[in-house]
Amino acid sequence: MTGQAGARVEDLLRQLAPQVLGTLVRRYGRFDIAEDAVQEALLAAALQWPEQGIPESPRGWLITVASRRLTDELRSDHARRRREETAAAQMPADELLAPSPADEVPPQEDDTLTLLFLCAHPALTPASQLALTLRAVGGLTTAEIARAFLVPEATIAQRISRAKQSIKESGIPFSLPPEPERAERLRVVLHVLYLIFNEGYTATSGPDLQRSELTTEAIRLAREVRRLLPEDGEVAGLLALMLLTDARRSARTRPDGSLVPLAEQDRGQWNQEFIEDGLTLVTGALSKTPVGPYQLQAAIAAVHTEATRAEDTDWPQIVVLYEFLERISPNPMVTLNHAVAVAMVQGPQAGLELLRPLDDDDRMARHHRLHAVRAHLLELANDRAAARTSYREAARRTTSLPEQRYLKARAAQLMDDA
Image (tube, rainbow, N blue to C red):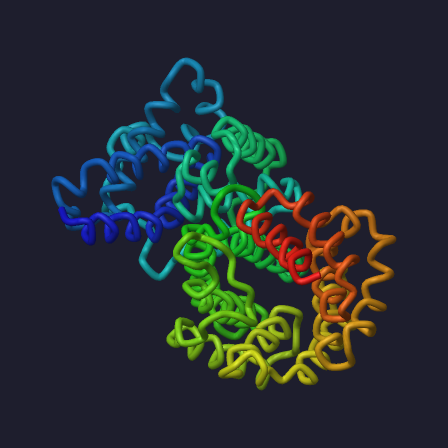
């Protein structure tokens, strides 16, 4: 198969992963070993389909292979006691031995949302939620997730193992949460996808500024949630935010991988299809549903995309949007971005004043972005010495090599201009 065909196989496997896993969990009632079996089936397909072609029923093929892997585990001596307590009580032994594509869940029954709610269960740590979502719903291998987050594969394996053990011990049913819990769990689902996207858009460490495999996966999963919950304004807002932000991807780095700040980007390189889709989504959500934080962030991103030049940006409108965002969803990062917008309207000293309270927040005081923003505002205020110090401090604190190089270059430029 060609490279294009191989990419088609990869996309198809990621699309089918949650459907196949949902089928197995519904059938056997065992998320932990069902997830392992699905991963083995996905690996087998990734190796065989590019050479042998995609089968007529790819979903049925994966269900059959994964079911055989799972039943082998259930029949092993190690798993016999657990099998007697769960799966063996649910169906005759001949069904365990001979799964059939005909047993598929009907196409209209999509388990993607159920799996996302399960992976975002409050019993799991945020790190485990991220890893389990990417593996169980995204179809990524442990090695792929480890590479994306620049941590050892063993670390990701441990997180996934702990997550599956927590699900098993807590007895979490494979079903959508009851209505009283659904809104809160959806908030966690959206936050997990938001974190995945952010890590891909600006990697927290390593040699590359961006990890497109993560942003692409976050957008794909957000589209799935949007398909399943088309009337939810915050789902639309998050997808719009991702599209409007990721539209800048190709303009964010130079050929050598160095960072290009927003004000210096060639806006002709921005992805117009993403921008149009994002604008449609956020406009529709704001006009029809209660306003939420993702919609407001998407609205801010929309204001940036509507300016043909950086100097044409409607900063007063952005200030108003950040003020609204701070009222409904206050957090230090919102304050940080609000300070930049205020500086663009009222001058750098006004922005610096808004940064002062953040020095008392331990999380922000350690974060490189606070020092980077302060450096930028000090530079605008023509306080070169203080700006140079803050740029150097920001560079010292970040573990992203492109950001580190950019911040050091800014400090050096101020030294040259002195």
